[in-house]
Length: 202
Image 1: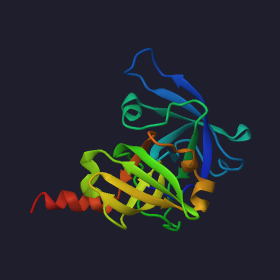
Image 2 (image 1 turned 30 degrees about the vertical axis):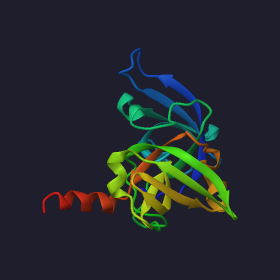
Image 3 (image 1 turned 90 degrees about the horizontal axis):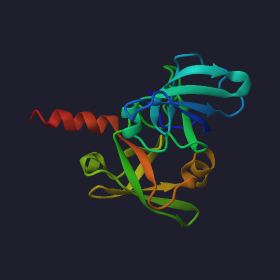
């Protein structure tokens, strides 16, 4: 489990094919910030842009680690096979950690598209068009995860929603790199998902 509070920004340093066909996945080499891997071990979970991945090799001296990502995961996420791209990192939640954002599973529910990213006062407004299937999970003042970042929904219109990004969020994540038309990984609020499922049995 995760919280959507980004603990570091890494970079996809290498992308290697795990096979010769489109049914094979890829091995990603991730460059991490200095000291980030000091408490990480093989098999640990780290979310990359909101997608939970397993550490398959580790080189703390070089501040590098690898993850293997399946073709299915690549098909259901965005921005995880672009060599040189920045990625939001979050280590898995420990039982003793603070829940600073909201409960996040690290499973991407859909890929949204940025429709507007512009300054509003001292902050920035980010508008996103989500897949129609996720519209029922979007609520005013509810939680949403965008590329792994826990955010509060400020406006909703069908499958379109808006969030406000303060300067601190832009400084410690990769969201400042977003532009209109860019795809983003979305995870809806876990509680909303279970409520929707329970209502199917009413």
